[in-house]
Amino acid sequence: MCVTTSRGRCSPARAEEKLSLAHALNRFQPVASCICDTAVNHETGGGGEWLCFRGRVDWCVISMFRRAFLSSGVVSRVCLLGRTRSLFTMQLKNKEFQALFTDGLKRIAELFKENNFELRIAGGAVRDLLNGKQPQDVDFATTATPDQMKNLFQAAGIRMINNKGEKHGTITARLHEQNFEVTTLRIDVLTDGRHAEVEFTTDWEKDAERRDLTINSMFLGLDGTLYDYFDGYGDLKNRKVRFVGNAAQRIQEDYLRILRYFRFYGRVAKEPENHEPETLKAIKDNAKGLGAISGERIWVELKKILTGSHAAHLVTLMYDLNVAPYIGLPINGNLEELKRVWMNAQHLSAKPVTILSALFRGQDDVNTLDLRLKISKEEKNLGLFLVKYRRDLVKDTNEVDCLKPYRDFVIDSREPDSLVRVCELLRYQGEEQLLAQMKTWSIPRFPVSGHDLRKIGISSGKEIGTMLQTLRDLWKKSSYSMDKEELLSLVKRD
Image 1: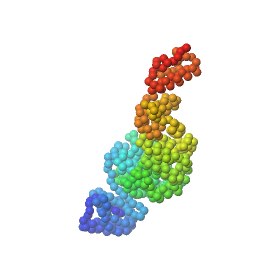
Image 2: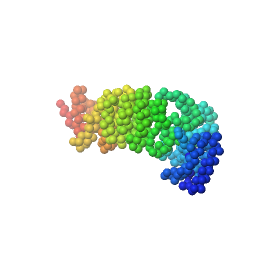
Image 3: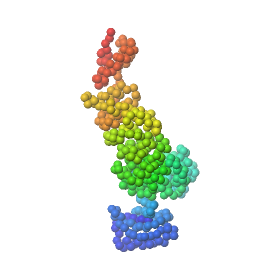
Image 4: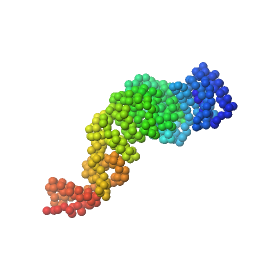
């Protein structure tokens, strides 16, 4: 166990006092199984002191010392150190954390406390709060079983919704127009690379151990205490992405974790190539397992990768690690085009398909991707459009209005979403200024109809069609400025 004081460097007398405390801990050896090698060290960069006890210390002892010393202000941090496990705690009291405490959460917290069940914030919300971000979704973990949660919610008259997650230990309570998703601590007892059979537990560390990445394995108590068993906080500060424990084992429990690793790397890592070699090896050795994962689940993760940082690097890495063939990407994907498009479009809020289309050498690649990932009809049509027009529909440098080819295309198109597609094409091409102009452009309405031509004596359907096209071309050349009277005045009458 490590105890860090909240004060500066200690005097020799203070150090001796700390050592006495260490010796006093030996009295708890039968309970704590604590083998004490005592030493006082100065924490680098922090000015605090470490009092280190190496060995195994049971939670009952940690709890006792946290109550005794954290509350006193003498000790600011308590850690467990061992060869394979550690516990790091600290207090979080930022405004984002305080903002979570709505009337609904306060009532839920009271209810669990009254019934002697622990309740903590889990997963991504903890990561966001530590980064000073307001989480969009907050998940909770608890020592209560699903049946115990149902009983206490029912007794309190709190409505429960969406019982699909109950077999996995999740109960969703609805209170004050807010949903609270609470999951029982659990252990994976059987996994097949896609799904897991779970067993409920009251051991927070075991639940943390089954999670994918260290930065996702932390818990935050409702008093602001962070519980970090696998140095997730350290990795978050250092912007590192690591699996909890053995990377290969975590991946084999759910092969989708390969893509989750890439996704969080794009969110967290500062540099594109700061991967641990053993992590990359584990991904390459287990890439084939992605072949059994549903296309829909893969596409959810891949879209998030494509809209995060380092997307071109991460997709290139998927090819290097033999991941690409198992997730529908083309065998000979155009990685150079991908890098160019991503560099141009990363700050233009391009859609995932827009970035991914750079890999495709032809429309067959779009169809192959669709077969594997079951992308939406809108996404597929956008991919086909980009591959078809990315070289042919370009700005006209000889015209005063460089946007004219794009505008003419929209005017002539019968597709209702043609303007959206053209804007994505401009993102693909990196045409930031033209995109800004196109987004503010309102599609003008061609002012002449077949009925107008009939009124002036043209009755032949074929002639009407030809004349309408001629007038439309003239209207386009005028930058859509000619009105109905001007256009009809150009029609030759017999």
